Length: 394
Ligand code: ADP
Image (cartoon, rainbow, N blue to C red; front, side):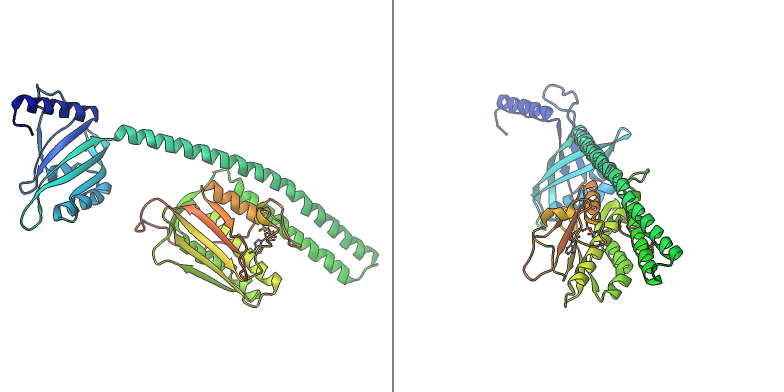
């Protein structure tokens, strides 16, 4: 501060104007006594004297939102103990009956011999308006994304309905043929049996289509819940276990120790993972691979979560490329070609993605599902796993 009173007054005036412009208050905290002196922006100054308020640190923190308090006071405590010189906190504070968002930065001005802070000064800013603007923008973008995803899912469901006609017509033809064989006695029971078996396979295919449709056009929309992706992966492997046993394939889940939380429609994600696991088992079976393992890997990425399904089959034919994600594209005699298309629709409707890794020498296929991480930390409450009905793929 300048010695000269005129210069001092000029500097004070400029500082006050700057704080006013930034809508910023300042505080001066005497840590030993707990007393805090502060002034908040927007309050009329008397000449060059801002209206100084007094409180205590305890009183100040009493007004903080309980959910934000632990994080904010941890940052302050680190600075008080000497682990940092500055702190930055963002929390909600109750003010005149409503919650306001506050951004506060502080700096330790002096410390005692034991290193503990004696005096802290800092700034305080009410950021409720910019936070509300940002939240509004985020909500608008999210609802536009959902509307778009919903529109494409509905379009997809319509085309699935058309797809139903084909197996139904084929069932009718096969059953009529079986009846004729029986009536005329011209063909043996073996032929009748074949026609009926074909009908059963076609009926299963039709049922798959119906199941896919149900998932896509659920009238109540997506039932979002928060759950641990590791638990879901294990449940899906339990569902697919009988199929894996029949195919002599070992199913493995590999995951990190901590919960991997997502907020998503559990039924849809279950269907996606089941699809990938079944495709993997079928790939190993079709190629009669010697190594017969499917590994489901769950892990956290910096801002998302990831589930990989890797198999020891022949890998996806490199000539097929992205076509495997097209609706009705299949290389299997009894395939619907809907699985991966549906997986991709579901992943994208959740703001995520699903991809197949490029072919890798002497390795099977690797499918990667990535979803936005569920809000909240690893300590969040998660729904206990419950035994579900046998979900089939669509
Ligand atoms: P479907 O299983 O009915 O054929 P999908 O959409 O699930 O339909 O799969 C499309 C195609 O992608 C399959 O027919 C197959 O050629 C290929 N594919 C899918 N998963 C694998 C895998 N794990 N390994 C090799 N190819 C695969």
